[in-house]
Image (cartoon, rainbow, N blue to C red; front, side, top):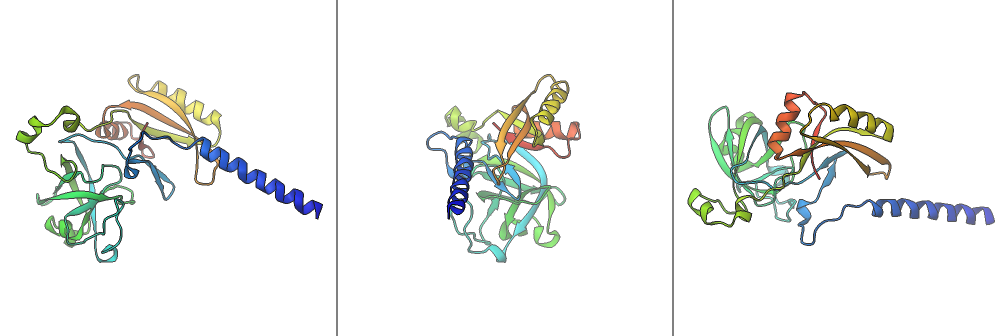
Length: 250
């Protein structure tokens, strides 16, 4: 009985330490930060929702989702309607109005972001069935597209209305974007990468972020910080052929 008691106490102490470590390293957010703008994990990858500016663009592959998800809850709590003009994006704010142009046939549609995804490598947006059909995705399944930010909070801003908006609404953007170039279990490995990337480009500073994975195991992530936009970070990744790099935001 004594052996079992000690064993049980030891187990409880271990759980307490793990919980303390997790809570001690949890990220703090400013009061009023929407839940949909907090970083999150999906399939072992860390995503950082980011604020953006009017006119900002992004290029990549679009897909669409339909009947299987019709009526299910989206990330902002709405019911997904495959006949509406909505879309899923991994990092852009909810209710952002986006023009999606199929680069192959020139067709375009306007969607409102109300969900997170698509969590498939290389894809940047998941259009609703209706929006996807308007640009030809119902025939091809996927297509290379260009995204352009037209407005926020479900509203499209024209050049005339934009001039009348406060600067805070014209430029809803965080500038401190970065690139994760490595993740290590040992601090020594992270320090080697930090030195390596310090000499790669003098304009961007490498830092080491001490975090924990889903199982509470320490991770040392090497981030290259100082990019003014998500597009600039992507250009850097392509220019230096950093195939395993991902976009982050501090």
